[in-house]
Image (tube, rainbow, N blue to C red):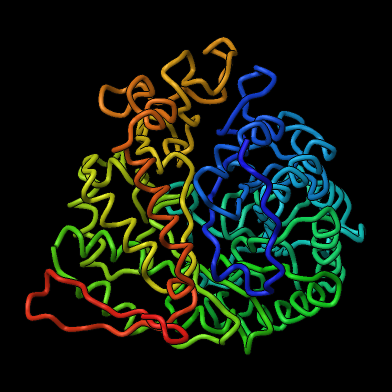
Length: 490
């Protein structure tokens, strides 16, 4: 085991960290039931620490029907029984902190599962106090300007509920009713959920689907003033009760529309830079710096305490919502010729398959991730170049078991293969027999070993997390050149 490392007391710790995104269900199965779990994750903390990352972002592990990867939460305060207990989670936090790693968890603020007790009560009794926890209507005519996000499965943002005798509002799947943030009791419930996890010791909360909290006629029901009023309330609540905690906004919007999510430094500490990600792949394929330099030119200045979060891939599709129609067609043609690689408005492929398993292209993209302004997030398995199973439904093809070794079930579990929550990758190019942690740890020239070295360099120079950027303009557009500068270092 590596030596313990104390947590930094810097309140802006999120500017210098490297984030490692983990699906609990996919990482390591400790009890051989076919599902990854919190004890399994805890047992692999030495590996995560060896990556030299210092922040772990956990995908939802709460009680859930698991119809949307856990983003359909049935109980905000309990773990899914397959993943362990609250005691297991507390032990995980303790061990992560002992190794100098912070932990970010998901707070799905926009909606619940239709199996949540609030919704069960709401649909069964029109006089229940929980009825007003959700958004109801006698018809489907309200809020017609709100776009449908999951275009592959949903035809409306309203779904008729036979038990309630009304339509309920949902921006995502029809089994995920949206919460009614005009109800102050709902706001208090969410604050109480935050308090529960922050009291346990969680260091940050990723606010899922945060642009969609309120609905107003005559708008697209995104990025409304009322949403920012609630975020200010949430930030003040967090700052008053806990030290050195962080809020990360998931707002898939244009940079100028994300800027208000920082407020004046009094809303979220960080926000994802969604429009940059597809343009990294566009620039790579076109061999032209313009898509990158132009979107960063359009990115406004943010408050001194704020930070962008950058990523190459994550647990969702490579979203193409924040590109033009022409750019979307180009990216589909170049990166997803097979229709099975597409889902909703995006591409469901991991990093390595997107670049035809090219080591040099992965290196180039990672160097951009680690050197552009912001905090980088790495998706589990991408550090070894895992592949995609396009035959699995929805976005499951990028959520397959972590490939630890060439042993049965990729070393993820000793369960009967038929009991696994999902099969590991077994194709000739990306199969676990060849692509796995054990093999790459033994190979000095592997992607895994290279990433460890680059992360070490990045962490040695605060300029990458905190510095300014100035673009140079070489004659050839195949060259992207810039200078990072911070407190005399450049």
